[in-house]
Length: 124
Picture 1 (tube, helix red, strand yellow):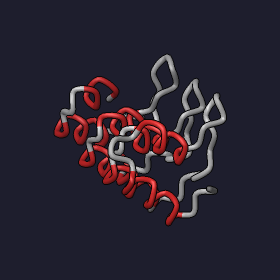
Picture 2: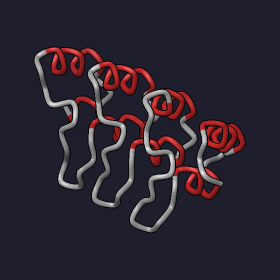
Picture 3: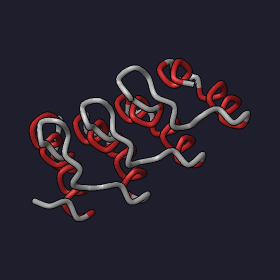
Picture 4: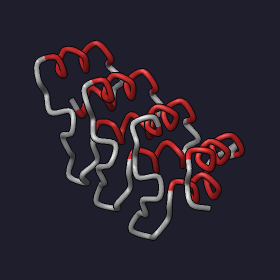
């Protein structure tokens, strides 16, 4: 499943998930398929993984969540879907950065992402 997500093979992902592949599988860095899809900005895969009940609160070895990835790379559609699933909006990574901080520091352009996160209730 991880390789199919990395390659954005939607049909393959659907077949694997339908066959009960672990939607919350992890690589050696504890990244999940959802985290990888958010980093890539693949909203279609994010939606599919969420439909199969991917855990939006999982963290990787750097304590990043899928929302951290979506916010850092300004993938608004992905972030919007994650927010609808009640993630920990103020989760801090290993360097004590929240999704809002990553959006402000890295996302280009960041305005819409920052507005979305603040409106969702991120602690400013």
